[in-house]
Image 1: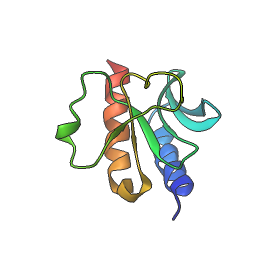
Image 2 (image 1 turned 90 degrees about the vertical axis):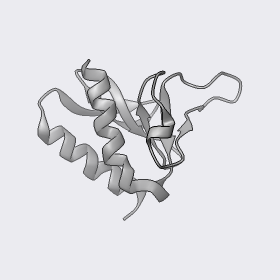
Image 3 (image 1 turned 45 degrees about the vertical axis):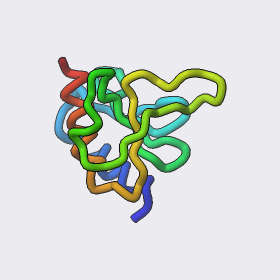
Image 4 (image 1 turned 135 degrees about the vertical axis):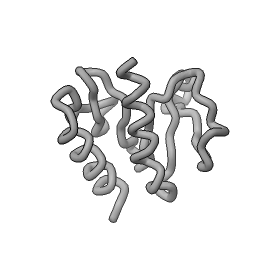
Length: 104
């Protein structure tokens, strides 16, 4: 299974759980929305990106989360983190964490 297929399966599962969760876009990439706001998406580099918040402690997750920095001449997107497909088994857990953050 490739990154896109894995992301699409996660998105379909989350969209089936609640009416407020829907498919959408984020910077031309496929995304997952909660009440119209993006909380996770698949980057053009086949990494999944999660809105975990500025206060998220990356030490609580045993994978190499990276701050999401898509622009060459701008600072990173605050509170957004990306994770490579190699750690796809953690994508669903982080998607749930991002969903809980956006709900509160």
